[in-house]
Every structure is written in structure tokens, then in C-alpha cells.
Image 1 (cartoon, rainbow, N blue to C red):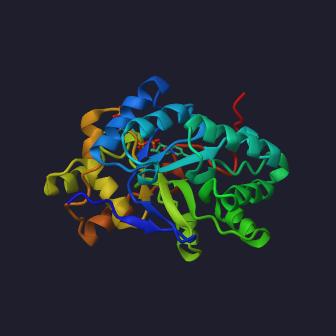
Image 2: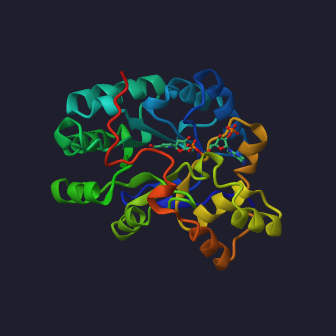
Image 3: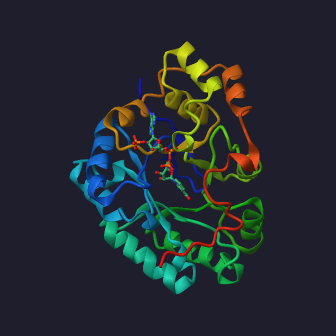
Length: 282
Ligand code: NDP
């Protein structure tokens, strides 16, 4: 009843379409949250060096009694490390913090087009090395705009397996999603419920009431039916469970359209604009 579908990636691998995100989970709470998620049935965890909780994610996966191969784990290259040698050291550190000899997916977290002479191309070629040596089973990008993806296509050999972008009912990010679909790049929707902002929308609560589901379940199901990969974050046990219960109901095509019509374009963005974002942690 609750089998999570998988999405085929362009490198021959597969990824569970539903996972668990750990952004803004305090390291001290991460082992408990991830362990609970694995208990509920999640088999895909999305972390990043930037989140400061890779160690605890690794600890929870190892402590779960599951085989490493049963859990799909993603991490990301932090913004301070785009230069190839820095990226190599940062990747070594991520693996060592996680306590793994490979990650299932490794992403460039942000393109940072205004930093590093706008060079995310040599960074991408460095991720290609990690894939060749088997320590990153799949590689991808995050927050890349169409221009950035076009440039990678023109200057490198490997098409990213995924692009992880802000995407929810208030920001459809349609141009970027459609480019991905046309070029075999799977879309991962970050902040899939806009950190809770969309849950009071009357259009969403009306559908939720009719289907006797929660607004979060309706929005997450909407993503699933549109083919995006999602990993909602929660540290609340009941919500961790609720967010996993998406596969015993369906939205009607009209409901999918009604939710898509809530798009506010750029005004719906809750996070930074990737063209301008230039934050490098101290
Ligand atoms: P989400 O859209 O997943 O929302 C999380 C928030 O919603 C939390 O405050 C949580 O509260 C609340 N919530 C979760 N489930 C429910 C529910 N069923 N009902 C009501 N409220 C709920 O936001 P995130 O920004 O965390 O995005 C998800 C993941 O995406 C991240 O954890 C991270 O892995 C990834 N991400 C990637 C980014 C990137 O740049 N690549 C940027 C941002 C996120 P509580 O925990 O208190 O239950």
C-alpha cells in the first residue's frame, strides 16, 4: 500500500521518489529524526555539508540495522569549495563524516555564478571524477538555472542526473523543470510544502477536506503525480509518518491543475534567487 515508487535516472540508477530532508534539523536531533524516518519506511535521506548533520545522518543509517545499499543518501558540495582541489577535499570530508565509502548522489549545492569567476564548470568536472571512481554513484546539481544547465551541456560530457530546485505550489519554477524534463534531468523539489506556507491556502485545504487528507499530504501527492522527487523535513513524529502516507490515494487531474494555478512566479520564491545567491559560510 505504501510502496514508494522509484524514478529512473539518466545514468541507469534509480532513486526513491519520496525521501526525508534534514535541512534545519539540529545535529543533536538528527539521529532521532532520521532513525524515526527509517523506521516509518523512508529509504532516501537528503543532507548537505551546509546542514552540519552529515555525521548524525551516517550514524542513524548505520544504527538502523539496514544494509547501506538499502538507503539512498544524497549530500552536497558546500559553497566555499567550488575550486577543484577544495571540492576534492570537501568530498573526502563528507564521506568521512557520513562514515560511508560512497554516496548515492552528490550535488553542487548552488551555482554561485557571481563567484569563482562564474566557473562552476571545473567544479562539475570534479564531480565527474567522483562518479568515475565510484564514490558518488550519481552526480547532479542544485539551484541551477536554465543558462547554467545549457553551459554544462555545451562544455562537459556528463548530463546531471538531477537538478534540485525550489518548487512548490507558489513557485512552479516551470522553465527550469521543463528544461530538465526535455534533457533527461530529474527534478527534485526542495521546500515541497514551502516550509508550511502553502498549507493554509483555501484551494489546498478544500481538496484536503474533500479527500479527508491533510494539506501536506495533498501537496506532496501533487508533486508525486507531477513526477518530481520530494523529501519533506519534519522533526514531529506524527508528521514524519503523515508525510510518508501518500500512496493510497490519488488527486484528480482537475485538483492537480487547481494547485498548479496557485503559482506566483518569482514572487512565490521563499529562498534565494540562484542567479544572485553568493553566500559562502565563514
Ligand atoms: P519543507 O517544505 O519540507 O517544510 C518543512 C517545514 O514544514 C517544517 O517547519 C516542518 O515542521 C513543517 N512540516 C513538515 N511536515 C508537515 C506537515 N505534515 N504538516 C504541517 N507542517 C509540516 O521545507 P525544507 O526547507 O526543509 O525542504 C525540505 C528539504 O529540501 C530540506 O530538508 C532539504 O533536504 C532540501 N532543501 C534543499 C535546498 C537546496 O538549496 N538544495 C534548500 C532548502 C531545502 P516540523 O519539523 O516542526 O514538523
